[in-house]
Length: 360
Image (cartoon, rainbow, N blue to C red; front, side):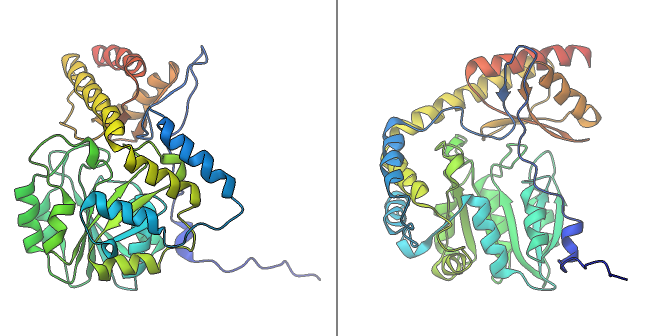
C-alpha cells in the first residue's frame, strides 16, 4: 500500500492568522468605481516624478543601490537628522515588520491601542510576539492605560498618530507625559503614516520628539501624501542602534530602484506635492462638516479619511455604498473608514451617507 505523502511542516500560528485584506474595489451598475477604501491619494505622481521613474526604468536589468544612499541623504537633509538615523523599508508596514523581527523572541509582548492599524496583530503574530491590545477611549489612544499595560515582557509600544482607522490624535503634552513613563528598555514606535495631513498645532512632530529619547523611533511613508503607494517606500527615523537593527532585518534590495528614484524626485518636488495635500485637507473639512450636518457623529480627523461608528449596521452601510460603486473600508460590528477622494468622488459618497443617515 502506498502511503499518502506528507505535507511540509509549517508554523502552527499560520493556521490562526487571517490574510491581510486590502481595500477592495467595487463597480456600480453604471460602471462607476470609486475606491475610498485604501487611504490612497486621489492624485497620481507629479510629472517630474513620473519622468524620474521612466528614466530609472531603463536600468531595470541592474540591482538597486542596496543602501539607497542618495535617497537616505535626501531624507536626512529634508528632516534635519544624521544619515545614520535613517532606515528604509518596503512601506512603513515593511519597516514595522523589520523592527518586530529585531525585538521578537519567545515571551516578548508588544502593546498597542485597539482598534488601530489592522496589520499590527498580523505582524506581531508572524514575529512570534504576543499582542497586548488596549481599548480606545473616545476613539483615540488611552495613553495612561497603555502605560499601565507595560510589563517586564514588553519590548515595543505602537502609537499610531493620527490613528488608523479613526483619524484621531494625541496631543504633545499627553504624548510626552506618556513617554516619560515608558521604561528605557521599551521601544516606542510613533507611527506617523499620515503626518503630512496634520494641521492641529497640538499634534507633535515625532522627528522632533525622538531626538532626546533613544527608545523612540518614527515611522513615515511615501504611500499616502506623496502618492507612491504602488512602489512601496517607507522610512524610519531613530537613533543609530535602532536604525541599524532595521537595516539588518531588511530583505536585500527590498527598496527597489524605481522606489528610490520616485522618492528622491518627490522630495525635490515637495512644495508642489503639498499643494495637493492642502486640497485633501480642505476636502476633509468639507466632507466631515457635511456628514455632521446630515446627522452623523464623526470624530475630528487629522488624516486623509473619516471614521463613521456604524456599529452593527457597518456591513449594511458598506453594501449601500457599493451599490453606487463606492467602496469603503468596513470593520464588522464597529464602523467604516472612508478615504477622501476627489471632490466629485466625495460628493457621490456623501449622497449615499446622507440618505443612509435619514433612514437610521
